[in-house]
Amino acid sequence: MKIELSAIKTDFDGKYCYVHARGGITADGEFIITTQPLRITGCDIFSGIEMVKSRDGFVTHSGIVKCKNLSRTPHLDKYEKVICDMTPLFHEKTGKLIITGSSIVYENDEFPKIPQRCCAAYAVYDSEKGDFDEYKLIVLDDEDKYFHAGSGCCQTYEEENGDILIPFYYLDRKGCDDSWHSCSSVSVMRCAFDGENITVKELGESLTVSVPRGLGEPSVTKYGDEYFLALRNDETGYVTKGKDGINYSVPVELCFDDGQNAGNYNTQQHWIRGGGKLWLVYTRRGANNDHIFRHRAPLFIAEFDPERMCLVRSTEKIVVPERGARLGNFGCFTVNDNESYVVASEWMQGHGGNHAKCMEYGSDNSIFVSKITF
Image (tube, rainbow, N blue to C red; front, side, top):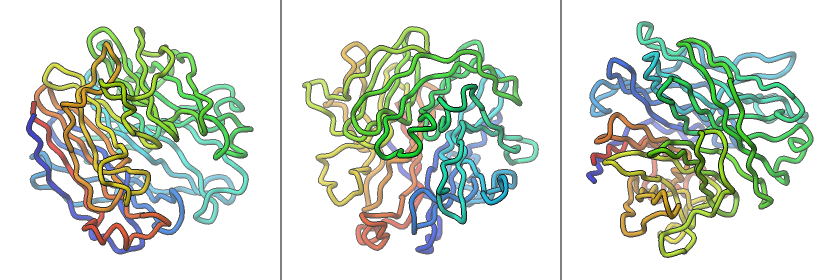
């Protein structure tokens, strides 16, 4: 495995930082990173989606440009809506690049006092226009059950027939009244995509745990004849596998092959298939990283044993190093079995939201692109 790291500067101004940077590639070989500004004061207060384009794997690039159709828009009488936490997927059957994530609603640039419904969201890239079309929502029936049902930060997977597996997490209406003390569930929807619209064909069984806040931000892939889910939880990461892509066994804690808990918690993990093997990219404790919020940096990669359902400790490498800022909201994408990428931006909110603490270690809100060659 060869790891080559490059960085895209964002001109951090101390007021906003670019977050949720994730990448993909179009049918004609154009690399796209999507990202969005975050207001430093506050929690998850996002502006619209922006992007970086490149024709050479981000050796050179366009700089960050706004997506004209993906800005905040007025919603109902007093709200604004935007999409967030987007992850690109190249859909081979149609030759289209899609981003999937969640919708989110704000009131006076803060979360609404009365919770508003949020849904999984997607947008399709138009290569001729060089921009994304307007976003659309995946609205599930039973509004009370799926009151907050998003696919933010979730890694999707395209089946051989063109169906897309879109994992998502949800809280019911009652749970949204006290989301910090409720347990969310995850599920996977099997969807059709015709090049413009996503339609839900089937929903899998729900998974959750009783540990605080349940499960969230699931990522799915297929390796061999089995499907694998990586799951976020406040106390430990979980993994599970299944046979049909939408139904999975009881999740188990993410551990190393010696049985020790991997130390991942309260952030996402994402899959890479490369060199004929299955890999997981993740964060963890125990890496001289106590100064990092929730130990969300550096990013590690290790081989995942699909039979024992664990990480192979001897294969662990740092794929994106830490410089004081968290990197936990990242993305992975594969070009072919020999070439994959990890994309992550430095989230400039330290403990207590203090960006100066991040900068003490060298962070400047760079977007890192890590090219992995197997």
